[in-house]
Length: 123
Image 1 (cartoon, rainbow, N blue to C red):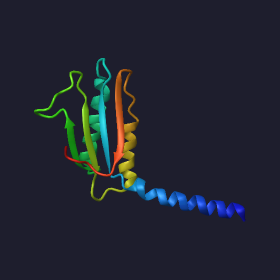
Image 2: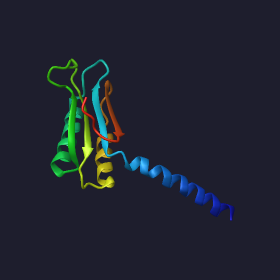
Image 3: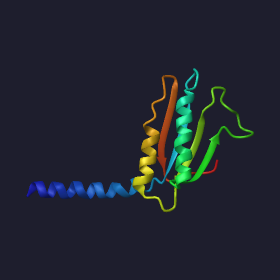
Image 4: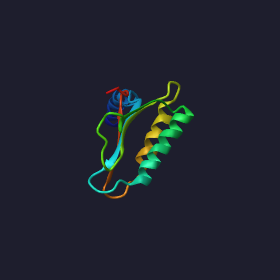
């Protein structure tokens, strides 16, 4: 009986946390250098995954924060952007898009941050 009660409590806790994850229908993406040369292959891969996401409808909104006309451009290059899920795209499909981005392993000296967020915001 104690196992059943424990299982019900754990299930209730997990069901409360699921909607918070489901509300992340966008992802902030930033790739850049921490002082040395930027891993251009990793940057190209990020751009290809995003482009494919836009082309297939997985991503409806894509906002580039940097580089931007009139803003300072990092010497090493890089990208700071946000991609928002398509209107009719399932959470599973958008999560697969996020996993593709997270699977990129840039070489030493280059960082890649992929952080889910509720929505993309113009800055």
